[in-house]
Length: 361
Ligand SMILES: Cc1ncc(COP(=O)(O)O)c(C=O)c1O
Image (cartoon, rainbow, N blue to C red; front, side, top):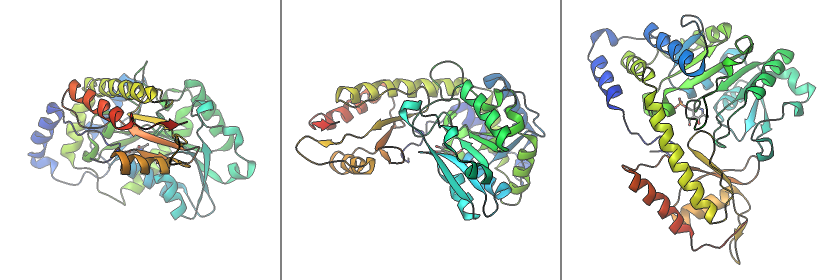
């Protein structure tokens, strides 16, 4: 299991659906741009969970994971000299592919004082003239921050004004702990300027199954589908059908979200006791905390990287460093634990391993 990857717990109904569907000869062939059954299930799910109406035939297409969707999008839109605007810290895949096509990547820092929302007004006219894609990811990896409807409204107006395609990476969208999950596409006008990418990986614990979808603006979805069709031949139909079953069972996501919420609360408490400024996020499974400056009378941590090295080498605790906007590390509560007691034991163990270190903040 990778750091930050869901804990692999499988839901029996989904596994049974996969097993049945895998045995069917009609599911053996290429699926190219996806099964109508899956798109229909996505449309119903988007309406039920996010209040967003989508035409399954023209406004939804599947992808072999959100990562692939992010990787393929620059192929559709980026020529040498174009640019992508993205946030830092952030998931790097779309920006990486943009560079490979000769484009630039402009980053907007995500700062605690702005509730980890970017300041669009900091972009220059020159940057805006070159930019074609505005990429967001809310709920955000690694900060765990959620967007607000007001921020998304600002984004819609900004994208219209500067002729940008908004790509909202909603990989964690359903894993919220307070209130309803928010889709960018629920904002009036959003479909005119953007697409949203959703994934089965986090909200249904189906990381390795590799299924996601892109939805929203019809032209952008079509451009994506035409491109994707030339890269892959679609996800195994049985996985799409099993995911159709999963999408009809949102209680799976509720259970997963409850688990992360509970674990994040325990971890935030444990870290706070040691002096960290650890606030449970409103979504995701990440706890993003500022690295200490060092150990009293001992080692200094100039970066999140320094601190993460200390954690792994001295304490055998694995966390991911982020140094794009200050020295931070990201804990993840995706560890494997079979019971509530085991969850408590793991968090207690993290506390015990750090309790003898006088951190300086
Ligand atoms: C922000 C973000 N987007 C996309 C992905 C990839 O999701 P998928 O498993 O659907 O490829 C991840 C996975 O870690 C992620 O953190």
